[in-house]
Image (cartoon, rainbow, N blue to C red; front, side, top):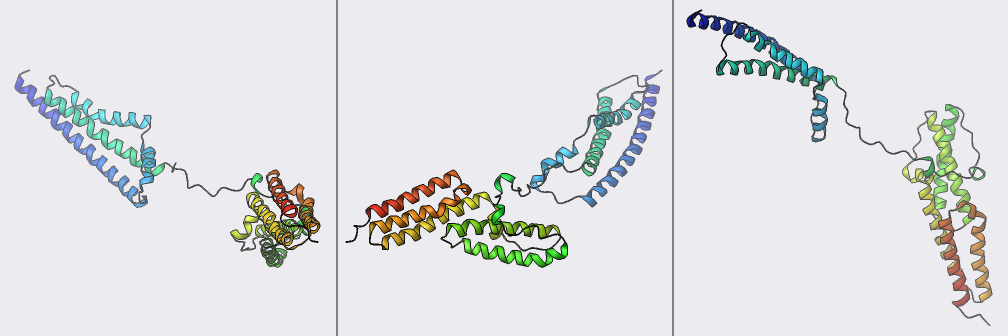
Length: 294
């Protein structure tokens, strides 16, 4: 075959391949436009925090990458059929024929993955629920009457009463200097809060604020016990300083210690240590602060 005939044959094959390529590009462009439009209609505003997640969701699977390579290889293989001579220009055309459909398929798969794959970013951390170890368990004997809520109608009637009782108890707990009042009233307050939770389960709205719900926390109760230890000690210290005889002073120091004795099983070892130090201070005050009156 003459060089002229070879060139003519090559030109025809090249022209045929280009027409086939143009048709393929038209179909791919149409597909990309359709998928892109769908993506825009459902896309959300991007934020810096979502960039990494979007890249992860758009990553191609191994199967998708193989398909993209196969699609990219179709036109180069068609162009190679029947070609006798391959030069640098022809190789560049083959690379072009491979890259364009390959990249288009990669784009299509990325958009497809972005639309169809679920979000994998972890949601914002929800408020951590209190564990059983951090929730205070009151003495059942001091909680007041329980198991009163057994229906929605009953809950609607009792909820306002429970809330009022809890609020009154909380107010008393902030000022009392009587250990007996503090410990029994504290558990009664928690008991009312537990009953209010039962009312909520029946669908009754209850407006308990953080000022009340904190009473169910062990950490808050520990702090409240420390406060009543020191608040009560201040009252007894003032009394001791007002007395004239050492005997009377010692009696009041003993009364302070005796006031807390029935409730020692309901406080922690750390709080017992605090109580012992405060009590020792009152005895020291009774022994040496004043001369015994004549």
